[in-house]
Length: 76
Image 1 (spheres, one colour):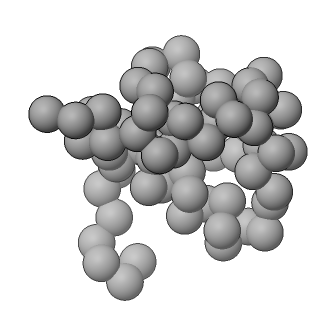
Image 2: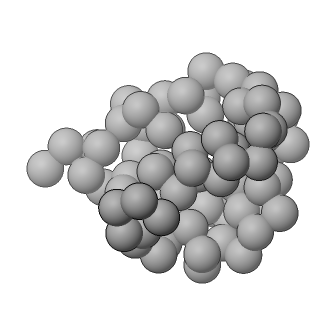
């Protein structure tokens, strides 16, 4: 199983929230305490997203970390 599979659905939810909110990935990364490259590595399956990362990303995005685990249906 690849890292991309382990990071789902968190990575896709983070990308969706960033896209819908108009936030810049760099700003989200900095607010979460990461470099832009580190966030990119997480979202693109080059680095495993750990629980601590989910908490930090949720806080940076202004959402409950648990919401990042909810799979989204196509078109949502």
